[in-house]
Image 1 (cartoon, one colour):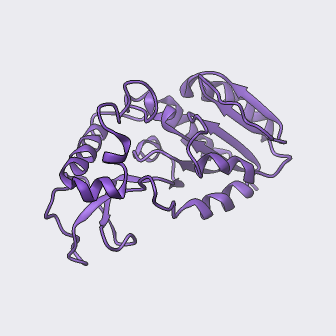
Image 2 (spheres, rainbow, N blue to C red):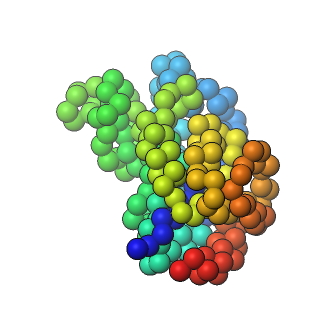
Amino acid sequence: MKKKLVVLSGAGVSAESGVATFRDAGGLWEGHDIMEVASPEGFRKNPALVLDFYNKRRRQLFEVEPNKAHKIIAGLESDFEVTVITQNVDDLHERGGSTNVLHLHGELLKARCTINENAVIDCREDITQGMLHPETGRQLRPHIVWFGEAVPAIMDAMDIVAQADILIVIGTSLQVYPAAGLIDYAKPDIPVYYIDPKPAYIPNLSNPLEVLPMAGSEGMEVLKEKLKNYL
């Protein structure tokens, strides 16, 4: 039986593909107050601004490609039962070949009803004011978890991490909660590998931890060889 390998990924994985990161200097939100473009209040105040912001992010996806880290993670499915839990709203893990991806913070290529958060549809085009959900007839909004909103997938993510035999944390500063707390749900005896060029300190972790202070693609190349020890 294949071991369960869980990957917690953040913006650093997609940065190598040219997707601007959230917190870094020069990141997506530069020029915008975060709450203006990533909160329910911001959307109510200026829906046109928010829709335009995410339309630009969506269009950018069609100009970027998955990188080596995405592809190596997908390739691990040959030897492990792999689940990717990502904070990223892009589709690069899927395009890289991963078949089991849980998006904590939503997906740019989906939209949802402003009234019913469960009324989610695929959406590859710009969302504009007056664009209505085909079933509810209400305004569409990006299928993104904004600040102040619940993270519907977090309970599923906790269960997945709790069942892991190996945990990989890659491309995340471990600063955004509740996602940053997922590592605490890992069984205390399983190995944890943390790949990030500027790794954060992880307090109170009882697991065997190996930190690889490097970019995602380089780190996954190194880790791919180490994982052969578990086969």
